[in-house]
Length: 257
Length: 159
Image 1: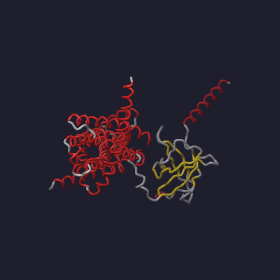
Image 2: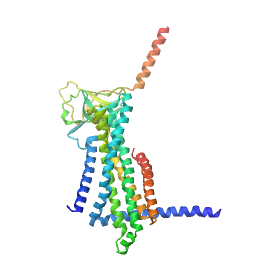
Image 3: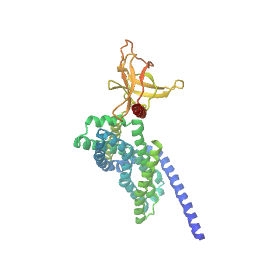
């Protein structure tokens, strides 16, 4: 019986200790951004592997999501004779919700898991301790450039997703289903507000960029340095990122609506 | 070409594409009010009822948008709604005795202000007021009026 209570207490303390460690490490990593000013090449390297190589999947899926939105939106709106509003439906749902969220989910799967595996393997093969032996701070050298690259990439990727999605909706709605071109764009421009909707989406994707990249980087850095530990950490990255993104999306929407 | 050069170029392309996408969203998808502000002037008009009218609603002449509603406040003395609208300076020849009414685009569409030009030789300018106004139609009032008049007519018949 007492063992049971002790276990609960131990777990609680463990939880807070882990949380505290994570926050401390996050602050150290953010502080490490300063050291990147003299080594921008590190960030560019990471921008390539995190951003450029995620671009294809983001653009292709953005296009398909836009096409599906066009199709679904048209079929619903045509019942009300409101198919002219298709542009508004496509643009608002992309810019406000689907752009940031789906991008973050894809990004977690495409780039986040790779980051975790990479850092985890560095730890397993004792490269991180090697760096420390050479008096190079692994937080500055490994974690900071990856986090910064993720934070920069995510809003750009989400913007591409939304822009391509709007084109996809245009292709289906206007070219295939015969919505009027002028109505598609003008209604969209009329109803989509820059300050309200687009800035809203950019803030969201920025927040998701911080969260997903941080989860990936932290899971890799704190994994058990065995092959099984790395594989578990990679799974955790994808699962946690998806959950946190969806939960955070609700909070941010409620805050900014 | 060295490896790092390709890397730099592709990252540059990536960032440029991202910024371009943001610009497309800003300019093509939304209406950035900040970019399109040419010269404007402000006029005010008081209405008994503006229900449904919002900030940024359109101000039109003959169905053409010439400006936007910039603010709606309640006059604390007369309890009328004072609507402040900004009109593009291109349309600076609106007679002072013009009328302003609140209309609905379509049956359930958005409210907008329609300006009916008058015939006076003087024109509206910064800060002037449109005196002839017509409030928005509140559908519930209209229906209840209709119903009451119907029942009155019915009871008249019975007599």
